Image 1 (tube, rainbow, N blue to C red):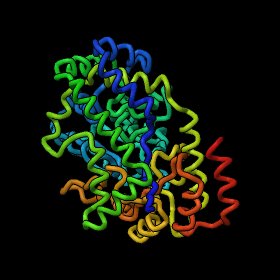
Image 2 (image 1 turned 90 degrees about the horizontal axis):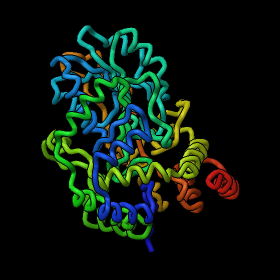
Image 3 (image 1 turned 135 degrees about the horizontal axis):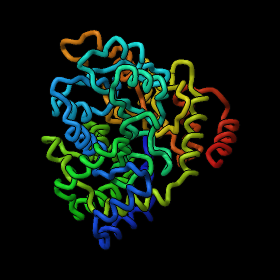
Image 4 (image 1 turned 90 degrees about the vertical axis):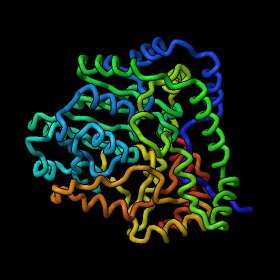
Length: 413
């Protein structure tokens, strides 16, 4: 019987799915639910359907001059770039320090121009970029400082860096503490926050039926990504010559491949808001600690020919576990033969291209990192036997008894 441990496990249980469906039946008055949710999280909070919707709101409310430049982390979600461009802004990538996944301040100093108005920092893969140097840079050049924390949520008390003008958190399907949609933004400027709230009030509401459909889709996804059906699905794709990674990645996308902005201009439904409030109330801190411990343990077992992207980050919870390999396809094959899935496209982030007239902004280090990136499973529910097979597949050191003993201690702490 062929089984395959999935590359990622949704941070949600069956009781949460039941709550989401129940909320769809009784939740009403989204304005009231939104106000209560926002006030409970931050005095400057704004609930949105997604981070992308919130970012679109932000740029529309700021109405920055067309042609203004925004420095962005050289690896980020491509839709963030598309949204900037749709508002007439020019995204300029700042190459990363691969060890910390931080935009390099020395490069930002060379790229800033009189047209630069802001810097957008993406916290990647469950780690956190040190914001102090970037905040000093932004203050020196009088830039707005925005942080995309979609992959870095650590709990209800996490409302963003004190130096950021806007902090954006996602609760989409793959994210920590998922509500199967939704976002929270912390907007420091009360006037800007009021404009964003007023603009969102003019958008059409997300239908409760659409949210219920989303819940059911991801319930099915959760059941299919159990080891046995997941393995059957992978085997069938291989036999039919189909792209397994493409099927998995497309099934978790929140927006369809059609004009983006009209899809963004919806405000969250009452069921989504109720679910998001529920998830914050019941946040599982113990699982977050176990996930961080599992990632740190696996990092300690990596062979010399693999390196964890962001291995020098001061804070990381291993939402994903990305390693850099010289032979990524060979590594994925070895993992799958061991019954553990690895993938190159487990995250939708990509490298931001430099503008045609700014060749000095070419993000060579980020491009090289992404070319060799493989995402390995490191979630706490991964069985010990699979952990051992994964370590053996990647060529890690250590006999099996020591591996399982330490895994038990860390994963149950």
